[in-house]
Image (cartoon, rainbow, N blue to C red):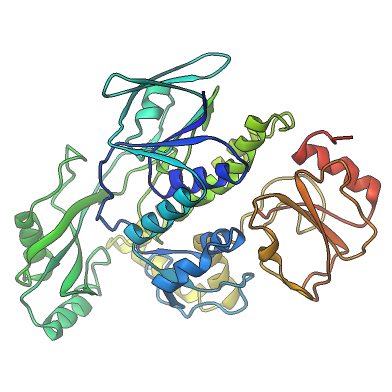
Length: 475
């Protein structure tokens, strides 16, 4: 029997599979498409996703193929300077097209032993007390202990589970594609500057190799999300919005997206779970979608592995929904707010001008950007130190950096006292005695996802906290 089937081979599914393999879990990824997509839905990674990659020793390969930016405009397109003093060692956006992210995560998955089966579409599932049966389009069946749907906004897994997906349907569509232009670059830049003064859903910019990325409002809402627009659709909408079609031709790919906003009622039904777009969809404002999915996977991976390995304490797997559902709800709210602020109606424009004035205050600017880049998240671990429930940035130690110690996906006790012990949990938690001038607490216990589970210097207090996240001690 397979330990975990992951339905969907996008960034969320691949990241989850990699996390599971760190713990020796047998993972099979089922991907419907026979070849990787060339569609560039996402253009970059935010700080928390960059931290995630750094925690697993993957960041260098992404930095080699990406470009670092410190630019404003991520909240509703309101251009303000990039905030200073962000609580991260990676205070930038990493520009990297999604197909490159997909490729790098695929390479990593293969390195750690993930089995990826392309051209395999899941069409049915059933579950019992011992496992899940997945039915594929070719008539074959697979049996696994757990299954995770990472199969996108039109998730088959979610539909088969009967999980509600409440929210708001699409009210507008936007066309997105890559193509060549005959118009000279100067004309494109001039038109772009003028149109963007009033229409923030419009953009035409070079991406290299003679190609341009074109974003333009569509005419109405498509009845079928699966049918891509035509080049003629782009020409017509460009002429309507910008007064010219720029001579677009030779498209590499064409697509569309909407402002639909929905959140799954549940992330778990028995042995089947949801992650990424299968659990939440929202407008792409602020570039949060791919990042939210990767971070879902990072939260879920070690918990599901603990369940498979048999040491998970009661409630650990359910804490995935308890922690990530509110995070997704907050992202949906901030994209709703951004959508309103981008409206051309007088009321939203008045609010936009007011918010723009407020963002002149450094604290306001930083607060909004931290929402987008997801470093302000604090899970509810109860009362305690201000660090409790937050992820810890990559602090410098006397012998290196914190994240260098987390590549294996285990828990970590960073002990600045040298008096503490994790005896009984050494198979799940590393104990490192080191000093950081950036950390003003005697010791911290970190979960495998880098969130602070305990702060203090009392051994008995630590012994009371370890079982909550790492199960019973082994004597």
